[in-house]
Length: 236
Image (cartoon, rainbow, N blue to C red):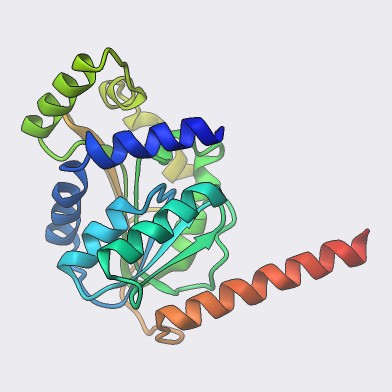
């Protein structure tokens, strides 16, 4: 995504889609009941969903994106929200999440699932990083019918179309279910409504390997990236 496109994307997310994130954050918390521990927001963009979740929970949150420019925006948004002690940005991709096994109590994502090239691999990675008893809540949606209509009106006023409108309208439930089957996941569900499609993945309760905090997650991610770089240099 070019710099100009990124700036435009973020402007729309910040201004037009602003009501979406608190609404979805509330739905995620109400559905999962998870308010403490560690959370991962995949394909975070400007970090708006993760920030909205942080405001209504005690979760420490990692904001993951493969675009450094988007992470720069997310970092600024974290500072503006006064949440620097609980939120951090991490560079990475859903197909190879740079975190340890069973390290996240909650995994969320809004809007990025449409762009995952290998959905089965992505779902397996999400399941890998979930703690026993943890839940993933990923997909795409606009929060409510009222918010959807407001956004449609705003975008029409600006003379713009937007990808989410078509994506939300499409029925991709079978594609997601197939991806979950290919990933070998059983305790999961796909639900579609007129305002979006959401996938939930659960990992059965058991003993956690280690209860890590957000700073441990960042350290682990940094060390893994350093090892990968060293291996590439040695291989070259």
